[in-house]
Image (cartoon, rainbow, N blue to C red; front, top):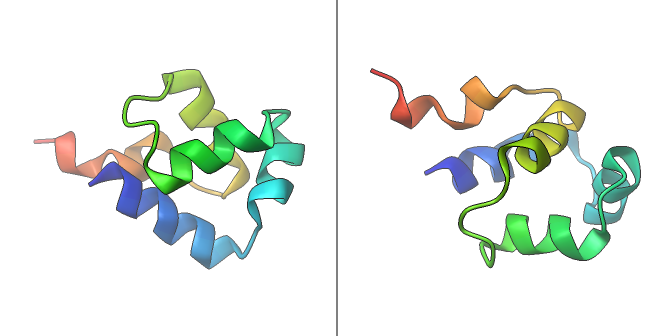
Length: 67
């Protein structure tokens, strides 16, 4: 699942939700809702900003959808 892949990137990078929010210029609540699974269909741009800060790419977290 893309969320598990995103959480793995977050864990590897070691950033807090607040740090991610600050670096992406997104509201902390938005980042928290995405990483907690409350938002199950985030905007691609929002997801891209978070993944980029975590040192990954959309391909990294969406690998399950590739064939």
